[in-house]
Image (cartoon, rainbow, N blue to C red):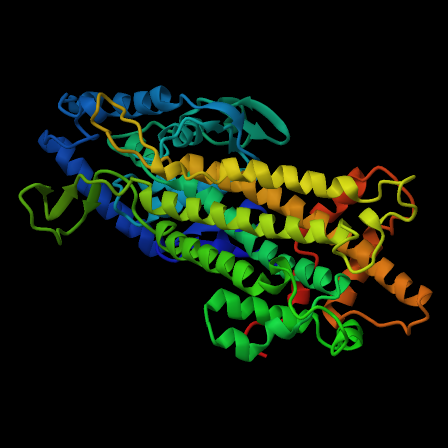
Length: 532
C-alpha cells in the first residue's frame, strides 16, 4: 500500500496533513515551485550581506541588540549563537507527535519563500522527520511573542549537531543520531538561525492536533448526551429541527441533527411520550444543542485561525524577492526587499486557543452535570442510588461523579485566559507578548480532562441503560430498545467494559472508556452532517 504523501507549498497545509505526519506514516517533500521561491529569497539575503547593508537579524544583533552591527564574516557564527543561546526552555519534554508537528510546520512556513534561508534547511527538517530524529523540546519558556523562541531553538539545535533528540526509542545527543542516520550537521549561513526561531509553530502544532482530537470529542459528546437522555427518560422533543432552526447557530443545528439521528427509532422515547413524564428536562439534557453547539462554533473559529496560521510567514524580517513593496522603511537590493515587522506575534492564535479551551471546559462541565443526574436516585427516574446493585453495601458509581467534578473544577483554573496577560522582555523592546504558548498547553490539558469526563459519562450512562431495562422488566413492562445510535454505542461499550454487577476497581474501565473517546470509537454513530 502506498504511503500518503504531503507536499509542502507553504500555502495549503491542512489539519489532516498535520495529523497524518505527526501521528501517522505520511511522507513529506518540498514542492518544486516552493524550492524556487526559497532560492530567490536567499539571493536577496546574500546580496544584502555582500553589500554590508544593515538588516535586522542578518547583519545586526537581536532584540534590544538590533543596533549592534555584525560583520559579514561573523554572520554564520551569529546564527549558531542564536540557536544555542535561545535554547533555554525548561520542564517536561513535549511528546513525539507535537515535535513532529512542529518540524512539519516550521518546514512549511519556510517553504513560503519569505524567510531567506536555503532550501537545504527545509530538506534537512524533512530528513529528520523521515529518519525519526525528534528533538527534545521542553514545554516551558515561550512567551508567544517573537515566536516560540525557546521551543523552536530546541527544535532547531539538532540541525547543527547540538541538543538532544529522541531516536529509535532512546534520548541521545543529536550528533550521534545524525551519524546513525547518515546526516551531516549543517553550517548555518546569514539569516538562517533567525528563520528557524521566529514563528508560532509550537502554538500551531498543539492547536492543530488539539483540533483534530476535538473534532472527534464533540461528536462523541453527542453520543454520550444521547445515551444519558435515554437512560434518564428525557424527551427528544426539544431537539426538533423546526425548533432549532428558529435560532440557527451552525453548531446548535448540527448537534440537534446528531441527537435526532442517535435517538431514531427509540422504543424508550415511544414508551414515555404522552405519559405523565415531566414536560421539560433539566438544562444539561434539554440544552445540549445550545451548549454543545456553541462549543462547535468556538472550535470552528480556531479552525479558521489555524487554516491561516499554518500557511503564513511568521518570520522577521521577511524577504520579498522581485520587490512588490515600495516603502522608505524597507531595505532594498537587486529587485528584492526586506521588511521588519511583527508577523511572529502570537496574538491571533493565542486568543483562538483561549476561546477553544474555554469552550472545551464547558463541554466537560455539562457532561458532569448529566453524570450527576444519572447517579442521583432523586433525579434519575427511579434508578438505584449511584447505580449500585446493592446500594449501601456497595457504592456503585458514586465516586465516578466525584472524579468528573474534580476535573471540571481544575478546568476552571486552566480556562483562565492566558492571552490577557503580558510581561515585557528584552530590555522592554519586546514589551507586549501573547502568552499563546501557555494558552496552547492549557488547552491541551483541558482537552485531556474532558476526554476523561466524557468517558465517565459513557460508562455511567451504559450502566443506567442496563438498569433502566431491568427496572422495566421488574415492573412487568415490555422491553423498550434505545435509539438506534444509542443502542449501538451501548453495544460497543459493553464489548470492552462489562456491566458493574458489584463494586470493583474502576480504573481499568475508565482507561478503556477514555481510549474509546480519544480514538473516536463512537464518533461515527453521530451520523452524517446536514439537517434531517
